[in-house]
Length: 55
Image (cartoon, rainbow, N blue to C red; front, side, top):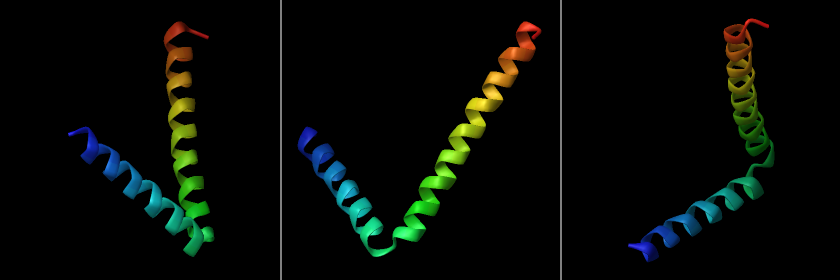
């Protein structure tokens, strides 16, 4: 099964490069949105633990 996993990984990488080259503005918006989701999640987790500890 490792060769199949490697092929799929390369297909995903090639598709990502194709998407960036053909539509850089949309690719940037997707990355920005993903980063915002991750940052909001990290902030919410930090807030939860701060309130749990009592700070």
